[in-house]
Image (tube, rainbow, N blue to C red; front, side):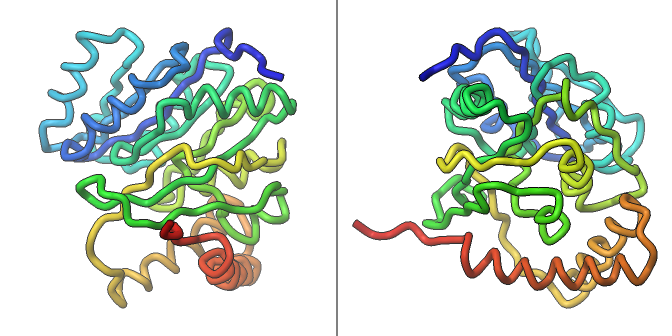
Length: 264
């Protein structure tokens, strides 16, 4: 059974900061969608490169592309909040300014949600390098991600998520969060709907070169702790417990849900 999904508007949330290197390719992957009833809301976080010039060129040709500008660099949390408040669509989708979608991503995923009466979903994704070459790796996740599972770990790729705003709402997150603000959105959304996996690779996640240094790892762990402390208002002990649980299930995800493409 195939339900025509073309009636509802999809609002695509895209924060951008100095993303000019891959921005054009990312916007083109949206324009190439077989599902055409969308608006692309780009919030630029005071970029110093030529991002605005690139966006303006697309806006001149396509009225579905909208641009908002932060007066100063305020972080992705602020940018996502601005975009979510501006969104007019029944469905909210997320795409960072360096990642890509397959042409049928929106059409297939919204149809999947409508057929099954799901309000929150995600898909599998492949990994590409800075030059868009496939790395031979892809990621999947649990078939169903409940509130309990979301507090275990962030199982979903941001670039794959779509949710129904009429059920979940236009989520706003604490702008003090300088990292993991997409996860903060899922932790709020999962309190209103379970997230379901469409088991198909419909997006490409860009992996940038450079390994995580010791100081970078320490900062990452601190940000993960602050996610639970600030966004979920948990006490220090509960926040530390959530952090340790995240570390454990992060290893679990790498072992069981991140895979290599098999050679034929």
